[in-house]
Image (cartoon, rainbow, N blue to C red; front, side, top):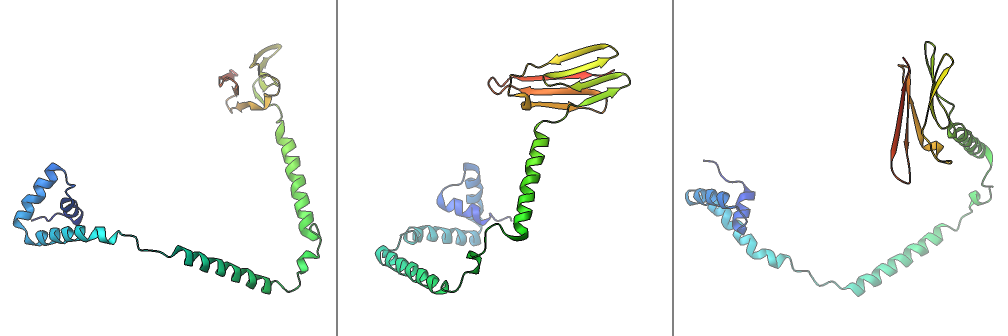
Length: 191
């Protein structure tokens, strides 16, 4: 005989079981004295539970006064400990090797930002076909003929164009217009 688990018995004691689960549990309870005892324990727990949920009376004013006294005591103890000399206050802020390293890091960051701000044009060549990125789009050049796809990016938004070269001799560009949300995609393949 399979006994219902504790969760099922607790739900049955509270009247929260569904129709079929309640019918099955009641059939089992009719034959099993062990589960009947557990159900009775859950029922008795439900009777004393409201008593346990009552909030005890708390002396808030006394607690607040004790907290203030503890804070004042901690501040006074901190002042006693801080009486000694403070050698780090007499040294200049930008002295020694740390200042040199910090300055070199800032310079390296600025140089990297300037280099990455405007990447070099991307060029993909396959045999005599040359595919490259331009300021306003992409172009394919074969022999003396040139095909250009211009995406018409407004001035100041050139940095929002993403160029994607591939190893197969093609290049693509993607631009999202910040005002309208329209996406312009251009792909040029070299044969």
